[in-house]
Image: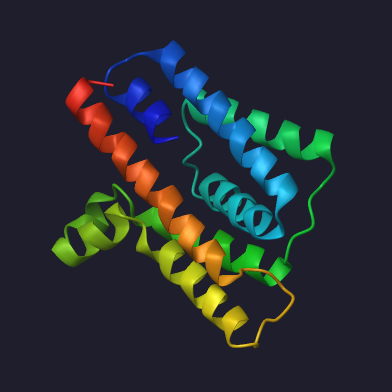
Length: 168
C-alpha cells in the first residue's frame, strides 16, 4: 500500500497507484481468506483505516473494494472477534496519530510512535504473547503472526524508502 500512497501522493502517478492498490487489496484479501490471524489483522486494519477516514484517495478506495470483493467472493473468513476488535482500535489510533500536526507537535516521541504506527505493533505483540502464554489458546495470533506482521511492516517501510529514492 505504501507504493500506492507514494505513487499518488508524491509523484502523481495515479495509474501506478491504482495498480499497486489493487494488488494490495487482492493479496491481503487472499491472506485473510487463508489464515484467521491474517483475517483478524487485515480486517482490523481496514476497519481502523475506514473509521479514521483515511481511505481518501483512488488507490485506497480500489484497494478496499478489491479486498472486500475477495473476502465476499471467497466466503467470509473465520476470525477471532476480540483480536479483530483490538486490531481495529489500534489501527484507528495509529491512523489518527499518523501525519497529525497536533500530535506531532507534542514532540519527537509522538512523531516516531505514530509515524511508524507502533500501536498496532504493540497490540499484535500482546495478542501473540497472550496466545503463547495460554491465555488466548485456540483463538489465533500465534507468535509467528507477530513475526510475519513485523516482516509486513518492514516491507512497507522499505517500499517507502525505495519510492523516496526513485521518486515513486
